[in-house]
Length: 64
Image (cartoon, rainbow, N blue to C red; front, top):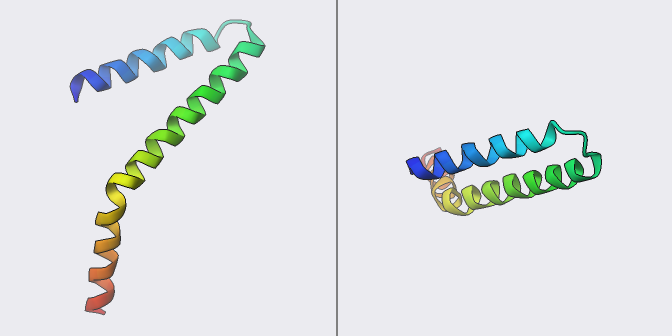
């Protein structure tokens, strides 16, 4: 887990360094890559946590 966090921080730092340069076309591509990366992370979290959240809502609904 720790190495994944270090890798993510290094990736973000590298992207930040690239975004501060005066390469406007490249920065748009990098923003697109970052948005896609965030979307993949959100989708993974939903897939992993989705059944647990659904069970929680079902449990609360049954108790009401």
